[in-house]
Every structure is written in C-alpha cells, then in structure tokens.
Amino acid sequence: MSIKILIDSLHSILSQLESELIQVKTKDELEKVKASVVGRNGSLTSLTKELGAIEKSQKPEAGKAFNDVKNKVAELISAKLEEIENSGGKDSRGIDISLPGRSWKYGKKHPIMQTIDDCVAIFRRIGFVVAEGPDIETMYHCFDALNTPKDHPSREKSDTFYFPDGRILRTQTSTVQIRVMESQEPPVRIIAPGPCFRPDTPDATHSANFYQVEGLYIDKNVSLADLKSTLMYFAKEILGENVKIRFRPHFFPFTEPSVEYDFSCVMCGGKGCNVCKYSGWLEISGAGMVDPNVFRNVGYDPEVWSGFAWGMGVERITMIRHRISDIRYFYDNDIRFLNQF
Image (cartoon, rainbow, N blue to C red; front, side, top):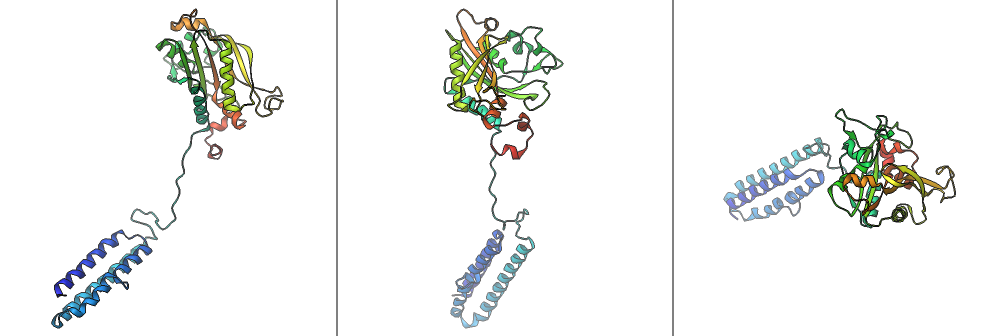
C-alpha cells in the first residue's frame, strides 16, 4: 500500500466517524460506533495491518499520520461522551431519550355522544335518516309552525332563551321536522338529534342545555300502532329484550292524539323500586300523531298524509342505561367519571 492510499483511508475513516457521531444520542450508540472504528475488527484497527506494507522510507510519515488520526478519534469519542453525560440523556430538543417510551392515550366520545350514535344506528336500521337544523331558531319554526298557541307557557321568557332581535335558542329539535317538511314532499322518515336549550335551574334531572333525539314518519295510512311498534323496537334495542313499553294519554299542541310513553324499569325489571318510584315504569318522553294543523302549516294535505312524531331526552336514556343518578355528572368534565364509558 502506498503512503497516499493509507492517508486517504485514514481521512475517510475520520470523516465517516464525524458523520456517525452527529447521529449518536446515547452511550450505547456511542459504544457501537467506537467499536466499529477502534474495536478488534474496527476500520482503524484493520488498517494497522497495512503499515507493514509501507516502504521503509515512508514508515515514519505513515506512523505519524496513523497516530494523529487515532488521537483525533479518541478526542471525538471523548467529546461525544461528555456531551451525552452533560445532557443527562436528553437530545438537542431537551427530550430525555433514555426514558422508556410512553403509550399514547386515545380519546373517546362523551357518553351522551355514544348514546346519540347508538340511537341513530338503531333507527337507521329501520329506514330513518338523520336530519339537522340550526341551534338558533325563529319563533315560527319553534312555535308557530308547530301549532303552539300564542299564550302557551313554553313561549315565556322563563322557558325560552330570547335574543334581542326576536330569535331564540331552540327549545326542541322539533324545529328540524318543520324545516324538513318545508323542503321536501312526503313520504318523510327522519330522526333529528341535537342540542336544545331552556332556562331551567340545574338539578339532578334538569339542565339549561340538553340533547334530544326526535323522530318523524309521514306516509299514507300511518297509525298509532306504527308509532308504538317503532318505539317498542327502539326500547328493546337500546335497553334489552325484556323491556316493555306503555302509552299514557297526554296533550301536546303539535300532535293529536298525544301520548306520554314509558319503558319498564330496567333497575327492578318492572317490580318497583326507588328509581321508578315503585311504579315499575320509567317516563321517557312524549309522542303522538302529527296534528293536521302542522301539516297545513307546511303545505301537506292532512286528508292524504298521516304520520307520527316522538321526542326523547338523550341524557334521560343515558342515565337509565348506565344507572346514573344526576344529570350534572355529564357536564362537570370530571375525567374520573367520563373514563368509565
């Protein structure tokens, strides 16, 4: 080997080492790089075997070049070791790369959103589609079109949030039913999940903001029996095969006839307990056949079309499903509570 080739090889080894040391972050990595250069089979160690092939007159120069590179290698490795020790195992960004990896925590949906998703999935299986509408509504869509009298208590400021321009925060997702009927001809088969707002004083069963899932089915020859079978299907899907349903006569301005519907108590199996107040039933919400005046308001002929509508509070369903006693738990943002779902 000529002196020129030897010196070029030494410079190549040094250059390669400098490049590799830039990537080194830990002591273990440094030891591997060091072994690849000055270890038993390292590149610099292997090059010492070539010194014997150098001409005698060039050996002093070759020996000096070899020792200079060897000393430089030692300096670079020593400096890198000091850098790693001074950083405490942290890289240039201040991250301690010597620590074990941390697994990512994946978020999940709020229990109310989980219930909405389940309700949507259940009704989609029997042909309903999701419809949405604005949270800020007009008096017409929230009350007038739904056949609500001017003197109805729900129009009072104690029951509805009003804006200075006369608009309101919707008190029910029935407003979506009106908007859908205004925009399309029957038949209609929709569910309308979403937030609602009423100025209620928060307690164990009331909140100023809450969620509803409302449904609307309009076609020819629709009956109250169709409504009951639909809600029966939903009850069994959401709460189990043993759940029963009952209707009680009621009054709502936008349905005629109107009913309140109950599910048998899932806590006691209908036998009676403190949750159902020993009645064996849990009140869910209201429903009924769409009032002919509502059809006329949206341009449907009540002599041709009939239909039913219902609404239920999502929090109510979620509380029953998970045996939760206070609606405020959903909005306290206590991670200990939310992590259970």
